[in-house]
Amino acid sequence: MSKISMILPLAVSLLLLFSTISQAIDVHYCEENAEYEVKVKEVNISPNPMAPGEPATFTISANTGRVISFGKMVIEVSYFGWHVHSETHDLCNETTCPIKTGDFLVSHSQQLPVYTPPGSYLLKMKMIDEQKKELTCIKFSFDIGLRASVADI
Image (cartoon, rainbow, N blue to C red; front, top):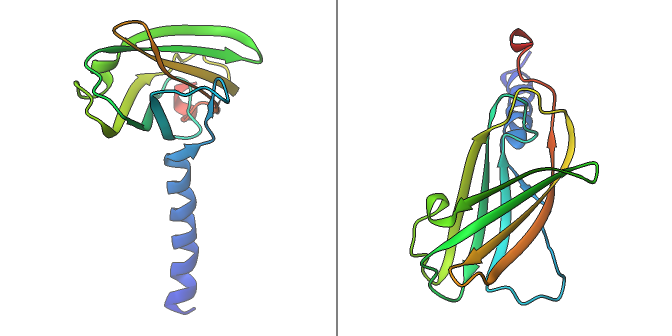
């Protein structure tokens, strides 16, 4: 067997593995015609799909035309259309403040509860400034798979 025929399956396997680790998500604005001050370019989730009881990281790549000194992120999660979770975070704990004009990243990590059921979820996230003005509102679906390790069951 040639070296190429041995390396090719390994390379394909690694590519498939890394494609599930972090993957860009299809993102939609909450209101199609709204003129949000923060434009979201991309959302990545790692790992994707997520697993109950395991840590997950959401990374949002965005752009703004003004300096943002303070803000909040309001997150709502639905499962089969039912609201199942809400949380609010200080935006400056998820990125560096003040946010300067141009591109910036927001990154949020947390460990999912062990009892999180597998399936498809909908996340709605709003960024709100110090005057309670909505800077952006996005929504996207994400998946939670089965537990990562049989030993954890």
